Each structure stands twice: as C-alpha cells, then as structure tokens.
Length: 229
Image: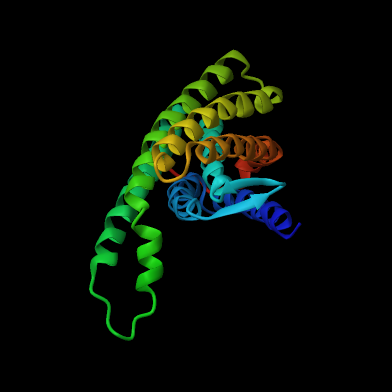
C-alpha cells in the first residue's frame, strides 16, 4: 500500500500546487505550471511502478495536471489563454530536451558521480520528448476545443463538472495512445506497451475526475488572485 498512499499524496500535492500558483501569481502561475508539469512528467515517465495491482509509468498525475491548469485558463480567461498555456509547455519541453542533450555529452571529471544516472535518464529523452510533444499538441488541441464547445453549450457554472471531465477524458485517450505507442514501441514487448496504454488511461481518468472539486475551488478563488494581462 505504500505506493498507493504515495500516489494519493502526490495527487493532492499537484492539485494544491496548481491552486497555490494561481492564488499567488494569477494567470502567470498557471502558465508556469504548464511548463513545469510537462518537464517533470517527461522525467517521471521513465520510472515504472506497480499501483493498485497494475503496472504503470509515473508522470500520469503531473502530466494530467497540465490539463487541469489549461481548463482553469479556458474557464476563467478564455480559449486564447489556454492556447498560450499549451505553447508554454511545448516550449519548455523542447528547451529542456535540447539543453540536457548538451549536458550529457560533456566529458565528466574523474570526481563526477552523476554521469551514468544522467545518461540513463536523458539518453531516452529525445524519443520520449518527441512522442510527448506530438501527444501533447494533439490532446491539448482537442481539450481546448472540447472545453470551449461544452462551455458554449452549457455556460452555467453548475455544468463546470461536465465540461471539465467531458473535454479531459477524451483528450487523455488521445494523449495516452499517441504517446505510449510512439515512445515505447520497440522498447518493450507489444503486450507491455498495450498494458501501459490501458493503465495510463485509467490513471489519467482518475486524475481527471479527482480534479473536479479543485476546479470549482479555482473558480471561487478567482476574486482573490492578482490581476495580470
């Protein structure tokens, strides 16, 4: 049960971090989270664990929380702000990947102890990052479109749960399919890849459902956040 309890704790930390960033930095805090979450998730995804009797990769919570951030942007600031959030995440991942490729190619000093670990982590990063960028663009484009569609159809705040989940759940199916098969085909056996895809969808859906009360909290918090452009 240790992994499961840790997973729940990390879930809460992610959601609270998004809300704290929003509370103290406003829209800028959400943009920061879009970039930060994508970078962290693409490092965490390299670790495989067992949760609730299923084998999965880490990074699902942190990555899914980027959809939570863009949904807040869509809800409170509109479609254009959400697109800017996605662009922030896209730019952050490209720059992190590029700079880490330089870092691992430096010849380490004899006293260095980090090179093997960095090499193990970031040698796979270009493929993982390429798969993630493709999945991120496709799924977030759908998420922003779908959120705007449901918001126009059901504009009342009482339907916030519907537009939050209806947009994100389908987007997570798109994201998980594109990323898993692009990143891990040929790395793992196909049966393992399919298992990762299924469990990734399940865990991202759990995160999407769990963030519902937090998006209501973000809407109520709006009047307390600093104004920004």
